Image 1 (cartoon, helix red, strand yellow):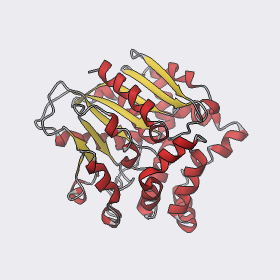
Image 2 (image 1 turned 180 degrees about the vertical axis):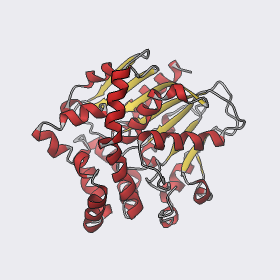
Image 3 (image 1 turned 120 degrees about the vertical axis):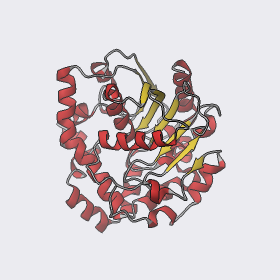
Length: 332
């Protein structure tokens, strides 16, 4: 983990932690400096060896607080693990590149350390939004090389495969709406410019570009002062730099990884549920391209309409949670 981590980010505000723990979650707020990855969890202390753990990964530009509306809608007997991605929120940046493989492995290592007894092939179900969904994709493709966990399935929220996203950027209009894909990978320049603009202001600007137009959904998105929680995280240079490096990895080494995966037949061999915004993701390209990434796994796709935007777990939590619970139960 990175020595440039500004640990003031942990205790600067704790209202989000108070809210999440009020939902019955436990956090490592008091030990995160030693642990490096900040997380919430439920049911891990006595989890049974055959019970899947639901691993929930947030996206950009957010933190694990994005799952606050989903948690109360999940059955209490589902064990859950909600980390801040390395470099995001309260978690330390990595000392290695913030590739999805490195990020995913760091998260699973943290999870493994929390299991009541060392065991191999503990079942997990991955759920991720935005960047977190890309971590899920990488972990699922790499699943054969991980002996600690058995991935039973992945729930991907509002993404297309990275290669498809880059191809889409050949269209001029797409370069406007998805400008950050080519801006953020310039880590030093982007970090300096975002700091000059104000990291919290930059986060709020993007937030307003990507949410939907449904009034109820927008109100749910902003409940619990969520926008402030996310904006506060982006006041720290290490968060800005690490999140830019996340996008740099997508533009550099991960492009070749994805090309190699497709050429060599490494695909998604566990089931996938894709939940997407009909007015956001579906309007920017075909979600059908996910079929090209499926191996032995089955693909289920569900669009969320009514003007719901990119932040589906917060703008349409009931529909999102219902689909997630059904998928979990079908793979338990």
